[in-house]
Length: 119
Image (cartoon, rainbow, N blue to C red):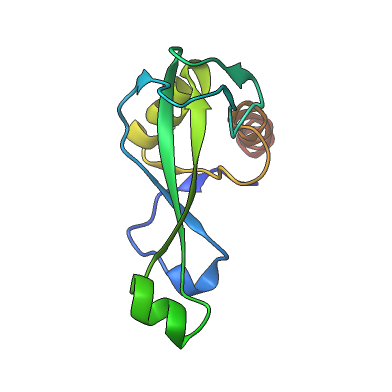
C-alpha cells in the first residue's frame, strides 16, 4: 500500500528519486500537452495542473561536484483532479506515492484495508 501516515523523517539515500511539489495549481505552460503522472489523463496547455519537481542523488563524484546533493530530473505534472486529491491527502497528514499506482487506486486500497481493520 502506498498511502501511509506522514513521517517527518526522509532518507533520500533509500530511494531512486524523490519529488517535491509546490501545492499550488496553475495553468500548464509548456509547449505541448503532458500526461498526469497519477491517472495518465492528458493535460492540455492552459489546463489547470500542478508541477511536481523530481530529484535524485548524484551517482558519482563528478555529478556531485556539478549539481551538489540533488540532481534535478524532468518535472511531472498532476491534473486538476489528482492535484486536489494530493492536496487533500497532504492536509490530512498522509504520505502518498507518485511513482506507482494512481492516487485514486491508492485511496481505494487504503479504504478497503481500513474496512477490514474496523470490522
